Image (tube, rainbow, N blue to C red; front, side, top):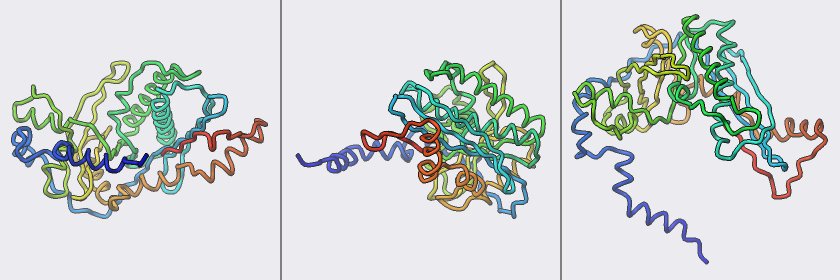
Length: 332
């Protein structure tokens, strides 16, 4: 029987072309576009003239390795680095757990982020810089649910996660060192809702994300006016976060930037300058985050020649691969 996958793919694209385009670009005749166009122009600004970046910047990222064992349990190895001036502050975790397949992704994401928080706590406890860049979204982290994980021995981990995050945020405030979270993908509608509020349409249901809005209406590289949002942590403690979006190049997608900490105009302008100065094209959106990403990531050769060999040596159990290479995953 012939493989018709590609032909069926082309058929789907052809039959749904208009719908697909509307998902990636707001049509010129769309009602929401006509409502927002004039207000968007007041709150979208050209990128500032870039100055040599003199800010002292630390950057944080994490990596994960997961391998399924023949017993059905999984070996998890995580590490997070906060890197500053060539120095690395590291946190890591190794464990073997039975994790429900529907909770594996949530478990992995929260474990990596938790180690990032702990690495930042360690850094803030002993060191100073102007601000810390973190890969990802702070608002997304605050919104992680606290329901228990279906993970052996780690059921209560979401509560521990939120406690560590609170410690990190408290240290940031105490030391007056802002945390700047940079995310390439985002479902945020904060900026869009802000524009609608300015126009007196706060009751309107929003189905347009901030990134879709910016990609559809922006005619030059720029950034959105910062919008301050109020969020509530797992124990009902209010958290204030300033969010803006940067479109560094017309062929690129926007970056969502969450700023926690000192929100004065000087700090914000220095952060914006650093993010624009540190942008190096479509593949390297930030030189500091790219650098720590390269340092922290696990590599297959490293895992096979070092980590797994030590596992076999100490456990006395070789990895019998009866179905070819058993499932393993590297993620950064």
